[in-house]
Image: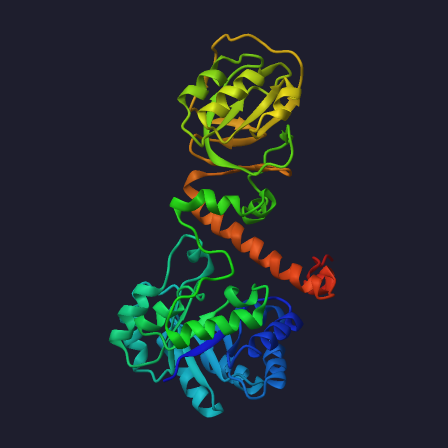
Length: 430
């Protein structure tokens, strides 16, 4: 079987999906998948529209059927689907009924192994049911944690004679690896649908497939814990807030000087209003690249100023965040160190030494622990819990990629409302 490139249209807007599919087809002969979100949004009508628009192209209906295999397969086949996707975790009878229905209506069945605990064993069972394709699929939420399908593809290809499809974070940098591991159908979503130039991205995917070589992607890569500084440096606090479902943003904490993009791990400081002893001690305890996050009880007496800033800069700190007050603003504006605070005042307190370094604190109404990731820009400061950092970094990059694609469509003359089909998705009340 020749290697197939399949584009997964996991979108909400049918017209937008068709435009993207046209751009992809201009780059080569792809199979077109109506992704599950698209089918849930537009119904079976999107299969009909895709079939009308692309009469000579394979149309895949990613129904992720869990029950009523015969009915849903018939429904998709009559709408124009060439291939219908059934979940591997569904009952054996559901898959068998889908296969029988597919024979009757001239379509094929792909079984998606997403969520299957023992994919190799399940694939062997399914092979005897007469399905046409097996799909190794790592879901988006798993991808954000750095999980890849490569090893499963490699193991599965040795154990089954059914053509293997693979989905889950596939791009031009890893498609060749999937083919070498035994994949026959390369399913690509965001690497094409979020590309600035979809035609060019499709051509690069074909090049990677045909030459079986990895080609650097034009989109953001998935990051692991060793490269989080790079990942968080590429996204805004707004991207991160969206990725965290509008959580993590500090309240009423503002930059002393605009134009910075601050990234680093927190060293927390708890002190009293005006008591600058622990903040200064923390400079010596901090590691290069740390960000001091200081809970100064939202006080109006400064616990930080010019001399502390010079010391922190010499130590190599990445910034300072203070739920309280700073002073010496004229000097701070000249010094090259990101500083965020609640208030700016002229008066300082005394070094009394109350408080603690490294304890859990609250800053800007957000709980912060030492080691949490802190990102600041002109919009404000967000806190990313250290045990979620890799996932949030990748989700933030995903948010930015989606925005970049919308930005390109706006540049092509569309309005934001038309790109996202705004009126359709306003919440209905009543």
